[in-house]
Image (cartoon, rainbow, N blue to C red; front, side):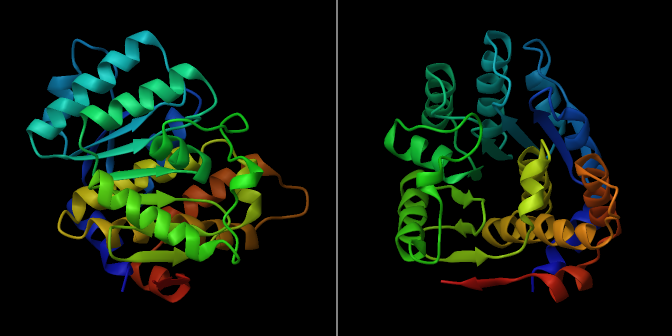
Length: 273
């Protein structure tokens, strides 16, 4: 079911404008190329409107905030809304500092996002206006488990209804929801958390998928998340004993590059609640 959304990305080669953090910008570009998309990285205030106008979608990632890029995020986001483009928000570290929290909430209040993707602590911060994270990682007290799954599903559906956005919470169990349906996804490997940037890459993947599949934002988002998790699984199977997280990062990108819709359909692990 979900593999067709990957095939559409490869057919359409969506052009994605990324205002993302400088820690992972190279990996973000490479993962977009690997899935069949095309990346543009531009964050200067003097060109963001022009650049976002020629793209199909915008990926905003607040991982390395500064005054210059904050203004660019708002300007590009509002221009994207004006053009009815897809916009994805990755509120990295929301809750960890006043600047991150206020910026993320300000973006949410002024820009209509197609998808909001983050860990559970970041999403709760957006929903409640305050929160805490361990750096850019989820607070352990917020972990989604089988015992808390029902409550978490209700939360993401309600937040989607409030924002009008597809809400994606990623972690040990991934949730992707609109106001009525929630994909519960169980792909992935714990070792993926040892690589800086898998979340940043995922938000870029999601942007490419929703741009290529504009009428199926929920399903396209779930497809991108399943692809990332499955690629983590398949890449881990190829790891040698002496290899570590640097090689693992490259293997994940290579696995995405070689993925097909059939491979994704065969390996995606999800249910719809």
